[in-house]
Length: 245
Image (cartoon, rainbow, N blue to C red; front, side, top):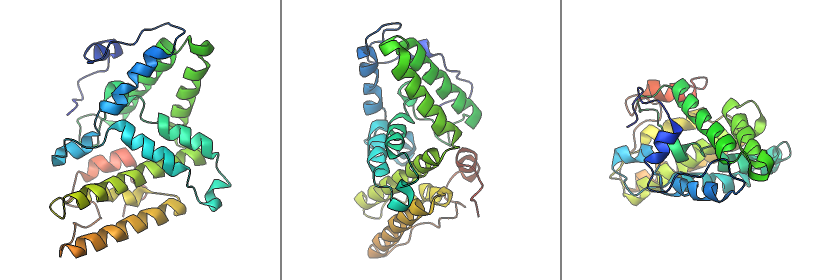
């Protein structure tokens, strides 16, 4: 678990990596290519609290997200830059290659989490990629990341919703693999934070299928109101409470 008092120092953090520190101020992108391996090997932390120790990595999560963006229904795709959404899905958690996956239950405030991640993206785009192709690629990655963080565009809202949908899919799949012995309803709460109707429809289908799965086991999962099944204040702080019941 990450502690609020631990302030990010990118160079110190990188020295703890099992892989070599990326070379800085170089025209070659190869050091960055190696750094990306961290996304393949760093687990998504939320599942580990439920003893899912060999669960998905950050890269696993972003890869499925990127594919999901390609399935935007025509009613939505006609208003979107779908290619930008796909890129955004692949970039949005890139900072976690250094700061790790900070979750709502970690002792890190949302502003501090944002500060750490922005500092990391600045480090990657400027120190590691600043001389690669004249810095154009690094700047583009940072611009796409900034757009996602601000959440002002339709593309960013869609990818935020897809982020939550991918979480719901993974939740149901872990429950299925445990055959009713693991209730992950704490994560189902994010369904209430999905905004776009098209993604809400996908989310509703996932939850209906999940209900049928639990009925097949002769059981029922916890309620989806976020009460009594997880850290509601922390969830609201991370996901916003505009859609809260």
